[in-house]
Image (cartoon, rainbow, N blue to C red; front, side):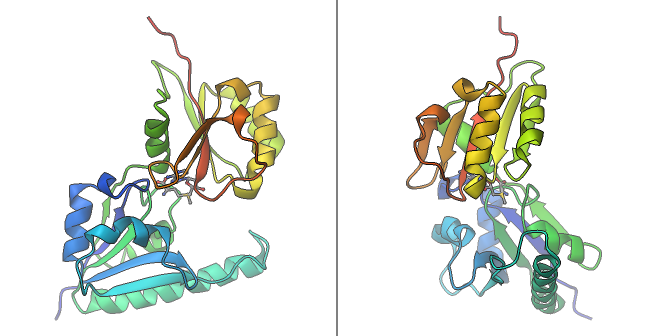
Length: 243
Ligand SMILES: C[S@@+](CC[C@H](N)C(=O)[O-])C[C@H]1O[C@@H](n2cnc3c(N)ncnc32)[C@H](O)[C@@H]1O
């Protein structure tokens, strides 16, 4: 009987292709199949980040997200459509693992940190050997790009999704020493208001496309636009007790 292949979740880091780990590069080179998530018909960010490391002729399988914009995030239709998509993706990956080939799913940042990879890993981990290769997270890339020291001494850091409602954000921001606010997009005006209400605007830095081409680093107060793209977040460093 053929030994099944291993399902790998490989982090690619925040965007600069030189921020891949050595292990990530080796796995991309040796993969029986290279796979990645992307918007329908697009190449996708993960595939763009890994581009310079993909050998010519490597078998690839893009996993194209179904269009979910027509249905409300969290609605039954949205959840069912995504579940079906994940099940289909799992089926395609399992077929290749059953042939004894390793499948490498590359992901922006770290695969176990708000990553779609986690939905496939949860479905496959009890059936096949799996291995995770961590990556530099988007937030670490962003605070490096901004030159910000985030946590001093016993500072407590909160990572908050911009999808939380405004009052919830204000409460959590007031209760923490340092914060990263991710998933801005259309939540940006609400997040900005919550930071203002928590009295933290002067300490907040906006980072767009951290470590990628077109990177922007700005004090939040200087960000004129009232919207933000997918790859953007806000950093509020802790102040700690310093000698
Ligand atoms: C679905 S999460 C994926 C996180 C990823 N797995 C990681 O380890 O960073 C996507 C969010 O991460 C943040 N993000 C990731 N990389 C970024 C970058 N290079 N610049 C700015 N924001 C980034 C954005 O807030 C974006 O909406």
